[in-house]
Image (tube, rainbow, N blue to C red; front, side, top):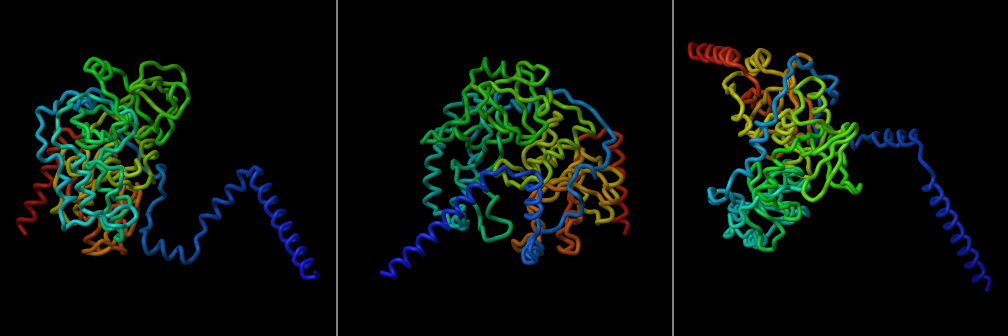
Length: 475
């Protein structure tokens, strides 16, 4: 009997203690947290252990600059474009027809996915069987290519994909330069309000194969609305705005979430007042604060340029728009969009689209000299194989760039990377002393492309490069 009483007392005390602790915890979690406490928590979270510091040192390369637009050189020029040149590219799908397009090379990814030598993985690091690819290819319904041939509008930010799936398709996720965020099914982000031309639907009707301004691919059918020719013509002739803030929620007229803004988008509007622009995308009307958008295109001037950079700086790297982020060429092209300057989708095409010069034959010091003499801050693209950057001027007497970059090669071969994994301000020699010289951005720099260059400037550049070539020949 005494053992029973002892057990009962211990059990009662334990339960009472547990209840009291839970009550205290419940009370504490319902209390308001002050801003000072939040700040202290954030500071505490930033304190890394020695082990964590060693891990970061092993995997990441440090940045040379404070990541802030306050360090950027002053913009010495200003201009404003009209909207028509950009809109002629933007609305190109609505002035096209699949009757004039051959499907032969459009489904290029299918061959790669089916190749038995290639290995692909799901996000859980398990290999994707070839049977899965065959199933999706059958669903792609390519025999129906061109059968719909109708105009449509993207009514929600959506991915343009080279394969009809919402699954991530990854290469070896155990390598530092593969896995997330390198989803090989992704090609681009199509913003709400983008015109497309529908070729056909997949067999399950989940996806439509479309032509967009940036290329061809599959989009989710639920993010499309069909447009008649009359409605498309009306839409094309509306006035447009462009967001000046990234990832701001936009609400419908009944105050429900509609979509998020993305720098590089343009949206139609039909009226405005002192505080808002009012527009309609597909079936829904929306309003957006004038603090978050301006009439398209905006002027290319100091304040606007640096605001664009500030909104895109330090965001995660996103291959092909993974998680609606940006890779290198998405960053450069979407930086310029707000100013009414069009660039194509990938880095090689962008380099050739503007007036470009091959400087690959120059040594590092000559490249620096060329950049100092001729490169225009915020109007010059710098291209190396597989990567493109925006020249932002000289910082601490070093040519510097804005770019979205995954990492720097560790060695001459292999998959190792010192990670950056975001959009960043760096020199062309970031990682110096950490990576081999031949892996530096400066050493690998191949071409400079000028968005704005007059004939006299072109002649001066050509004469300079010819003189260097002649000097090399005489040696």
